[in-house]
Amino acid sequence: MTTYLGVILVILLASILAGLVRVLRGRTPAERMIAAQLFGTAAVAILLILSQVMDLPALLDVAMVFALLAAVTLVAFVVLASRRIE
Image (cartoon, rainbow, N blue to C red; front, side, top):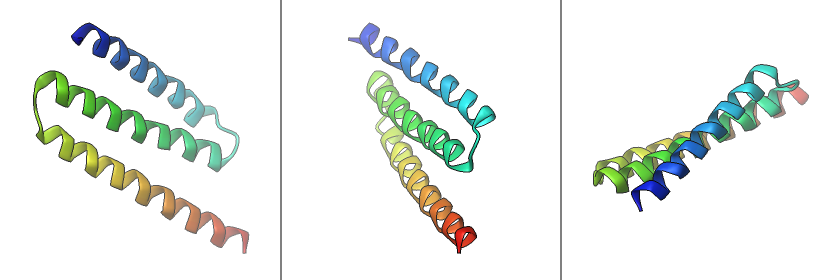
């Protein structure tokens, strides 16, 4: 089971690297924001897996905080983007 979770962690890290490329080369702010959301989602998934592998339930709380911060960040981006349009 640990090997399986290790493979998933490597895939998640690869998705973060791919998202980093999109953040650096994204044409629009929306593309960059979606890539940043990918970071938040992958970070939460990594923390959840590490919580199981390392048997540290405190990481579940950290993952929940990251998920909430990612949602607040997205809402703030949408509000700022809508103000620019008007």
